[in-house]
Image 1 (cartoon, rainbow, N blue to C red):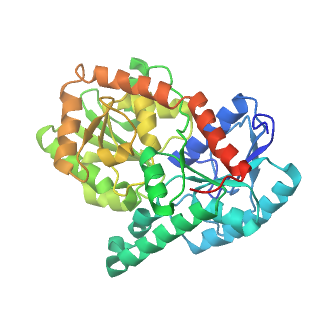
Image 2: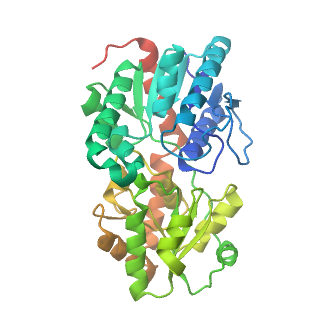
Image 3: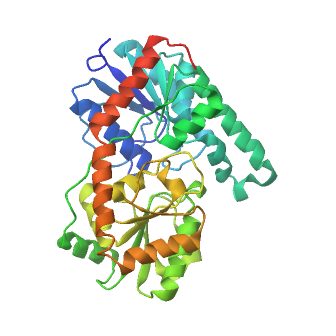
Amino acid sequence: MNLERQAQLHVAAMPFPTPQGTQAVLHAMMRALAEDGRDAHLLTYGDGAGPIAPSYSWHAGGRVPGSPGQRSGPSVRKLASDAALAVRLRSLNQRLRPEVIVAHHVEAAATCLAANTRPFVFFAHTALGPELPTYLPRGGGKLGPLVQFAGHTLDRELCRRADAVAAISPNLRDALEDLAHRAVTYVPPPWSVPAPMTREERRQGRQDLGLSEDDEVILYAGNLDRYQGVEVALGAAERVAAVRPQAKLVVATASDTEALELEAGAMVITTELPRDETSRRHLYAAADVAVVPRRAPGGLPIKLLDALARGLPVAAPRRAAAGLPLGDAALLVADDDARALAAAISLALSSPRAVAEVTERGRVFVAKEHSSERFLAALDVASAEATSGRTLR
């Protein structure tokens, strides 16, 4: 078997391309495969929006009327899109005859089972057990434990029925191994380290946001779904602003911001999550510190890797690190603790020279631990297991 020469088909039941983290890291994975000379194919929904010039083969699944768009979480419309995706997957599988299919997240794995396409690797991007209740009002109330149980059951059964399992973070690997009683391969997602941001980019970024040079800018870049725990970041930012009046929280998101704007007031500035790299560089250059909250464990916040790679100090709860061996490359604090998160943010704002070493360690960490080489080697391990018919643990 030669995985470098055989076609490899990746499937993701999500809109593509979009500026969201999962889609961005999926693009990075596919680009790493293509740059290594592999015959890489990606199948997704056909309703994304954003600039893309892929070096790999991208196939859009059938778009259904009223398709789910960019909102995260389960919906009835997504079921229709998944059914259309299964039809397209079966057709592509017959035409490409891939050595292995890599199904990203639960919907894609379920689609592989529905289409009876094997062998496939279930590449888990999150744990449904802790995440599913966050999509319900107030965490589901009395239904919360039942919904969590359903999520755990789905995670376990998909792991057991897949030919191999990969996980995007060390913590998720450990959780799925404990849940499904089988081996799971941690596959570090590849992420590039761009050139350092310039003073001119900082000036332009602040001008774009209507900020002055004296403003102290806290950046949150991501969606506003409850599993993110944005309320903790907001509480921390409010504590910081109470003693540092120049502090502003910039929320860059593809989500609806109306409720956040009503709750937060003038301290929060909302903007669209940039779709191109130039605008993204301006956004990050305008910031003094990135805040990366996390309410539900399991997945890996790609915004964490992006901020570290760009040399921005990161304040985050330990849960957001997802088991990555960050050491002193980020300012990590206790989970769900707005006071502790505020202290980390204040440290970054008040001691920029002191955190300069932290930011450099962050860039070095991403360059080493999230290189294309490490990603490819780990994915090859999972792919080889899927094609070997190895007995499950």
